[in-house]
Length: 499
Image 1 (tube, rainbow, N blue to C red):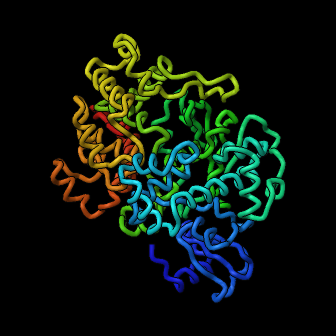
Image 2 (image 1 turned 30 degrees about the vertical axis):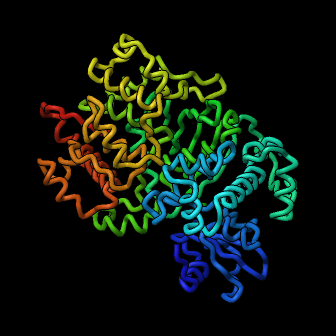
């Protein structure tokens, strides 16, 4: 990433939120580094230096600002920077991979050699992999001390430090502070939950994003009410941790308030990582909306609804083939009830089951799938899919290569291009995926062939997934307008294929 000092300083002076998380400014007169949006008085130009990452700023001797809190800055999207592999590795580190893994294991996870990963990291972030990982541990610990009442021992373990003594020593050496000095406030009085704030780059089309998920919410797994989204969460952090999350918008602060159940305290980085992907918090709406032009004008800041589990999205896509959304929701709820792990009684009443794991679904007898309403053909497809995910031959997460993953999905009997592209959109977060055979998309664009669809949508590459969300939103608006006119006339129904 090439940082032009003059451009960076202008962004700092104007508190330009488009640059939040894109770089950090070190201030020599104070010894701290800040986000470009920090509310303190703008430092003099001669006192400023600019860094690609928080880790690079700390490598040069700066400590994090306690006011703007660099750990709260938005991250990057998959197509947001040139170093996609480096960013994939950084995301894994952010989510706690290095707590148990090594640099070699991280390189293998993203499909490169260890030497190549080290080169990528140095070029992209200006630091080594281990330096980046150490900074992220400290920033997470800083956040946990400031935002929760977790005991220091729990904070040290959740942040990936092997012992409290090691944690105290590193904190004192790097920041010159003790855990008590960073403890900003006491517990919020609720012992069974943890509350965090995640920043985003405005604008954010929260209502449109929420409506998309509300239409597809599965009873027992998800709940949308009072302007908030809640769902069950199963996180694998060496062992499985079952809990729930609630997400609400705080527009005045330009953040999402994320509430996690206390059962997820040991896997906070992984849980927050899932929320970031679900809400597409790495998006740069200024770039996407400018490219989409007129299509994005009605609803600026549209996000790509992601996922907390790629396998879940794939199952939703298969189940939803050629049936209505309502029918698909009913089948998915029945599957969760039969194969999903039940949440404890302390969970909200509307959240009862975790979505079934790949191993659990692969092991279901065919009769159980039929009882849940899954036709025989789809049942075979689901179990073939589940088996590949369970045995590790198919990965469905944001770090999987999209082209190869789409090809691997299409090789499964019963999965066509629509399903594979939908999974690439939501599970992989691939911004140029586009389910061109979708009925609603063809209807709203007024095209009848796949070739015509590709010709019409080529102008929106490489952000066609965002275009699809805008077009689905338009289709829903048109349907609502037509309901009154169609009420008195018998009408045939078309499959919505919008799972």
